[in-house]
Image 1 (spheres, rainbow, N blue to C red):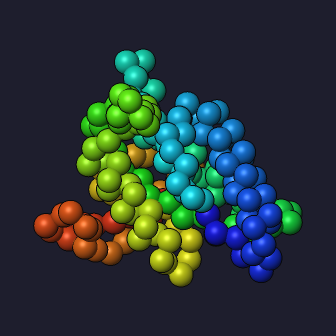
Image 2: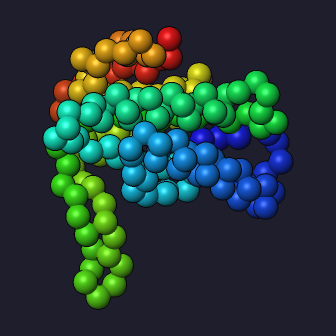
Length: 169
């Protein structure tokens, strides 16, 4: 999330980040997701698969689109540039850290690393975007399409990776 407004005072920046976090948290929770980390103005969310068959991948995509729409609303007094990275796969979850110091519940794994790297790539695009890995290409919804983009180099990967843009319908 980046703000298009020019007032970069510390108080304004904190106010904008808090607004982003409030709205994002509400949308994430409504869709069954969990905010794992806040890293500056970046959120790491995860959505668990369930035995009931709920499609956590679609919920994650809907969350990203809803957050993007919430801040792109023409009636909003602030305009935000929202970018994201999404990937799906097996993760390890649990309390990770020092038993005598900082200990947090988190998720780790290749899918989390890929999402972070795709988010970093998306931040540098001219047009704000949610960029997805190929692990989400089989999703079908009346609310979105996953449009093929370029092949790029991803840190930690030997081969170039095809990326996709999540687009609302």
